[in-house]
Length: 359
Image 1 (tube, rainbow, N blue to C red):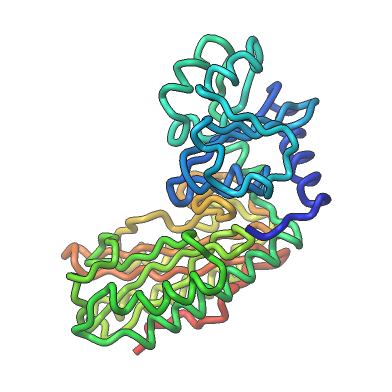
Image 2: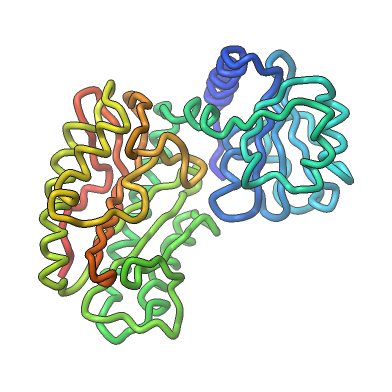
């Protein structure tokens, strides 16, 4: 995990505490799990990368933060990398937290998807737990220059990995064979296990396996975080598309140009969704996976770029955009990922890859 400066940590804490004050909360409790993609919120506030089990960062509105682990995780992870001085190893973290937070109103990131049941049971009734996923993600959506350096490094790694995938691809090879050179590059370049790389089989996402033989057309889904911990998503379709997919690609070209205008400070997430999905909707395609979303040290963050989401985009937000076009036959589809930087006047695609299908 790349070291984060003291100024950057102070900036993050100040932003979170302002949001706590705004929402009438006494503390933020951020949950993280070893499940890929769900550990990043803990890393964001502490610098610690979860290797096994789970962890919490408790950030009170007016006192020093604490990082809390289950006792069996004492030697699982590099605990010296945490910037938080007080580290607690508790037999039952929920019981320890319940004693510390008794009677307080606590904003919880990960209440629905991350917090273990045993800890929720210990906390419930001892303090007021408020689901705080959206608010916490909005706090960290605008990236600092230090964070953007990390984002750009992740994009370089991901883009090079796509080229490795492209070079290895040939019809008749297995998905595992084609992905292996990209995964080797990702690990060599500091991603560790922070990779989640798949292929689409029809409109469905599938783990790349040794028994999955690739055909004349291939849609990889490549997602990585470099040593700084910031996730990005960059991929393009490869091979010989059907006539239906060629039509989808025309809509992709229109989306790419629209995004350069609409992903700007002051536009709403709803407006961005409408602009980038227009070409797909007008051609009669359904959209599967979300059009896009904020991305950071957790793989999928709010705001979502979607219908009815009125969150205002701000300069230096980072968005993963990937319209998922699906034909009526439920077979033809197109899904290509790009990481965008929201600018003052429009969006900037960070990979440098053109929006096209690679032959």
